[in-house]
Image 1 (spheres, helix red, strand yellow):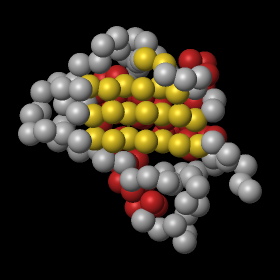
Image 2 (cartoon, rainbow, N blue to C red; image 1 turned 90 degrees about the vertical axis):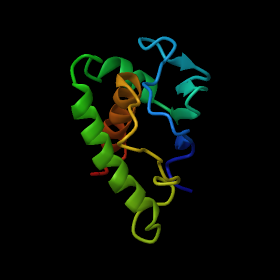
Image 3 (cartoon, rainbow, N blue to C red; image 1 turned 120 degrees about the vertical axis):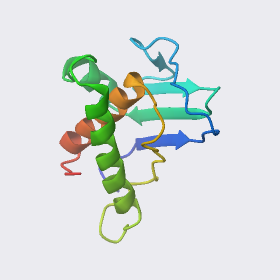
Length: 136
């Protein structure tokens, strides 16, 4: 059995035709649903991000740059590149470990998810690359 017993990243985006800005209830402290689980949701725009990975929450608190360090356009551009590569790897389970790349990420660069969503997604990709020795 692989080292990874409990790894996951789910990013579900089901959007209506609206392109309004996402509103996170408290952008400084995302709602924690379980230990090492971060959940951000917006019922109005029908999206949900759930990041559950042992160690991500503590890594985010101790090693990630502050939320104001990166600009929103920087985060959006990096996330688009990372998501594109991630999704390509999901489609190639014979080449890339399917235990690492389990699910496709639906990220639309034309939707304005806001700073908090992009910040958490970007930092998850940084954490993922460092933790699992991957280069996206």
